[in-house]
Amino acid sequence: MLDLNLPQLIDPFARKISYLRVSVTDRCDFRCVYCMSENMSFLPKAELLTLEELDRLCSTFVRMGVNKLRITGGEPLVRRDIMGFFRAMKRHLDSGALQELTLTTNGSQLGKYAAELVACGVKRVNVSLDTLDPDKFAAVTRWGRLPQVLEGIKTAKAAGLKIKINTVALKAVNQAELITLTEWCAEEGHDLTFIEVMPMGDMGELDRVDQYWPLTDLRAQLAQSYRLKDLPERTGGPARYVELLETGQKIGFITPLSHNFCESCNRVRLTCLGELYMCLGQEDMADLRAPLRASPEDKQLEAAIRDAIAHKPKGHDFDYSRQETSGQVSRHMSHTGG
Ligand code: SAM
Ligand code: SF4
Image (tube, rainbow, N blue to C red; front, side):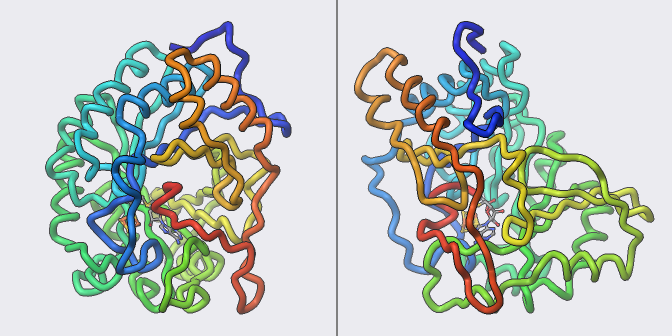
């Protein structure tokens, strides 16, 4: 329940923090080439926050004015008993404090969980899908299999979930599939957002500059087949939207590297260790696990959250200047949650 006696979370740049993304695990059943190395070492399970602790943390944020919660990872649906957590969060939807409970998933477990997610009040899911070619899919995700994901998406749609497809723009991988993917989303009634690849974590053998396909190029390529109309819609995040006039589709572009979206940023990210990252592109974080465990009362935790928000930076430093990736952040996306 929103607590009106608690001052809301406002950062030093007068941005109201109303959106929390929570990475509930760093583990995953895929090993996408831009996200993880093949031989990832994961956090010891004993160090992770329990689902009860995650509940307490999220509920504290909700009391302090967070009204949108996105569950991510790693792959959130591979965490054991994650449905128990979704069921618990439903109470905040029921009370009206939370406007939206949602998740970002690779889709592999949607066949199993879609109906239960709907029962927990989830209305929309973001599903990451970079290609409709089974061989390319296997190559990009290393461990993933396309039919399972497509089946999961089908089940989710049948269960009534609105689906947004997130596609990482990868030069030489899905460049030739731009129109195929767009047409497939139109046929299926899915929204579609393209993400520019970001310099997160050390990928070993892979050179990010080789993967990088700027969305300005992607947009120009799209404009050869469709008339694009810019939409004014802003979500407080890095996405910008256009409408394809021929089909009425809404297409999103997430360009964290080439555009500055920080001035309207309304979000913070919590990891499964209880670290609060105030900015996806900065190393600075606050430990919330210690105050959480220090006392069964929430006063200390609330103070730590408030202190962290007071240090939210103005913006990030990502920059692909020419052929170098600067502003690189050493942690992997699966740690902070995309
Ligand atoms: N496993 C879930 C999934 O894949 O949707 C949730 C976590 S994943 C880290 C969240 C999003 O981050 C996915 O859409 C993924 O494509 C994206 N992502 C991962 N690494 C990225 C990178 N280096 N640059 C851009 N997007 C990335
Ligand atoms: Fe797993 Fe998602 Fe990262 Fe792919 S992008 S490895 S599915 S966490």
